[in-house]
Length: 277
Image 1 (cartoon, one colour):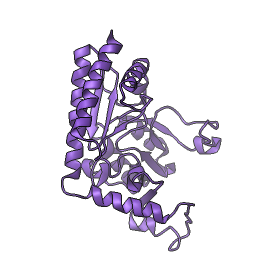
Image 2: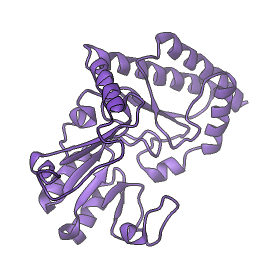
Image 3: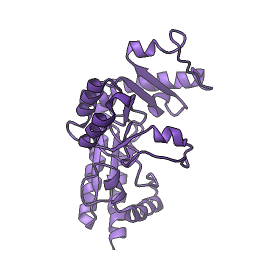
């Protein structure tokens, strides 16, 4: 089972190479819809192996979990004997030293990590409770390996990155810059008469052209993607490169300075006025 995009189970291969059988064994529930998850668990609880979810969504734009959603998933998994898997590939070590799970106070059974921990190198990792990790070779029967597993260059880059992330005040400074940026962008949009939704957690943030909060994929689809495209090009023409799709989250780096943030806000104000004219 996966909670995120919403809809019913798939039945055919898609462009990403997901087989019909794998898709058919996956049940989907809309993000932030705990009622839909509970219905699935009530009907298929004994068949569900795991619930997979981004605790802070970044693949339909930036979408925060509503109060009680992740706690409800944790309770449901414990009640029905299935695993809770957090995809923290985007949020892991980007929003806090303990990742998003430390902010919301919900502990998954398995955590998937990537991106940030490699400092730009191709690195990924997973973590789980000891009894689950002990199932992996050489202690257990599950074999897992990859071409880049334990790559010395990637490991060195990752260790250097995490050392920098652990510095005193690192995440507080990152969060302050992200918050200042989205507040400035929201003010700039309001001044131009453009409706936007913004949010930030640590170094992860989002800007969506919409007149109501985005809580799931349907909300994300209903946002003004044509307007975002115009905004993207207006910003790009002024030297600021945003994600080209409105379905992507954005990230603050420790390399970004206060001057960079000020420039983005000023450029956003000019760009919003352009697309509103």
